[in-house]
Amino acid sequence: MFIHTVLWNLQDGKSMDDCKKIKDLLYALKPLIKELKDVKFGYCEKKDDAAFRQITLITYFDNEEDYVVYRDHPEHLKVKEEIKKVFQDRVVSDVEVK
Image (cartoon, rainbow, N blue to C red; front, side, top):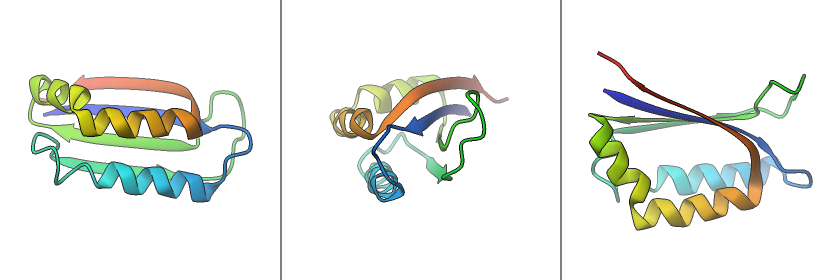
């Protein structure tokens, strides 16, 4: 299993409503990209310190090759452009779990 995790903060002036719209866009990818096995998305309003991230996306794939299909898929790229309008301070972790 390959797990792709992304963490962000909201941009200044953006709201939790904006965050919910991104969540809906991300969950809509699952039926469009067969390689995407599961999606988990969570968020909170607090931001205690600079290391804290408000938004977490966790995506699951059978292997890294399937992740690359997702990463380069045109529908995912559209969502990624919307994400750039709402989120900032991106941190990524990609791991293979055996």
